[in-house]
Structure formats: C-alpha cells, structure tokens
Amino acid sequence: MAETVTAQSTATWDATATKDTSSALVVTPTDSLNFQYSENAAAFNKQDGAFDITVEGQSGATDFELTAQLISNTLTSSSNDSTLTVGVEWNGEKLSKDNTTTLINISKGVTSGLESLTNDSAYASNKRVSGQGNFAFSIDSATIASNDASDNESSSTSSDFASLEDGYWSGDVKVQFTATWTMPDSATEA
Image (tube, rainbow, N blue to C red; front, side, top):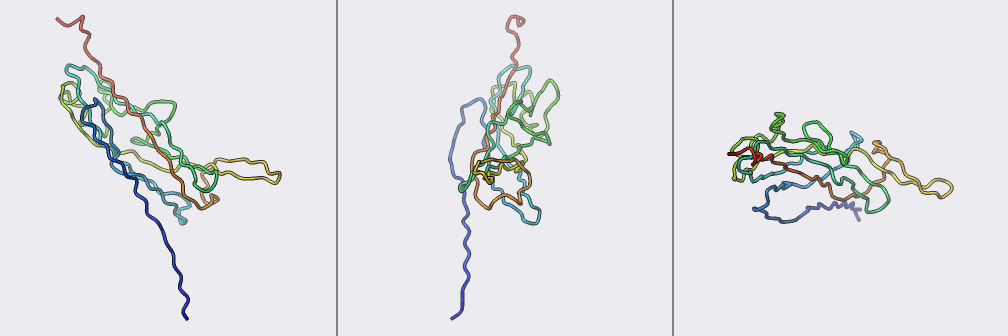
C-alpha cells in the first residue's frame, strides 16, 4: 500500500463592519495586515497598508493639521511568551508612541500623500472630503522568552528572526489620528 503525506494550512481573514458618515474625522483601514516569515530572507515581509480618510471641513478655517501617533503595535504568540513589534512608517518616518508624526500641516506646506485634503475647499468649507494614504508596516523586532539553566525566565529583544520559534502571533496595530483646524479670531472679524 502506498504511503501518503498530507499537509494543511489555515488562512484567516479579519472581519469587521463599520459605517460612520457624521464624525468630523473618519479613518478606515482598507485591508488587514498579514506578515509571513521568509526563510530565504530570514525576515518577515513588509506591507503597505492603505487607509481611507474623510474630514468634514470647518467653514472659514485658516489652517489645518493632521497628525498620527502609534498607540499599540505588539503581536503576541498563541503558544509561548514571545512577541513581535510592528513598525509603522509614513513617507519613511517611523511613527512613535511618544511623539506625533505630521501628515498634513497647511501653514508649513506639509501635504505629501494626502493632497486632496489640503485644498481650501476641503478643510476650510463645510464639505466632507476623502482621500487615501498608505503606511508601510514591518516586523521590526521580536521579544523571545527563554529559560536559563536555573529556571529563571528571561527575555531578549532581537531582529534575528531565525532564532524565533515557529508560531502564530496576533494583536492590534492602532494609530490615533488627530485633526486640528485653526479658526479665525472672532474678535478681529468685522
């Protein structure tokens, strides 16, 4: 009788549904992130993550700024204590949990990637205007849990993914967007 070899792999899709057409700022990721380890590169793949963004302009605004700040970026293993840290970049600049990254600042001429939101008719009117941007996502590092000879648990952070145990990691990558409109001083209007 012939011997058979069988292998299986499970594909997973994250599924949610949201509709918001009334908030002054709405940001919607258009796809989920799925990182795969490449033995050849000894690294996880990088991904562009598109997002739709809609702002409701503020009539008469004289300036507009849109910033982003990393809130969470850790994926945890389902089988051990290891974690993966997801890096997020906007036009080559790493987002951080400690500081905001400017995506748009009209008065400073920062508009790259979201030009449709930078016209006076977008941010300085009462219309809703949408655009699309992309973040670059990557697995930057892993925290690898290990036991030493004295049974004391320890961990180390590394970008040497070859030494990471096989596994499945999951979690959320959250980025907070903040829109700020500068309105004219009503005391100087006449």
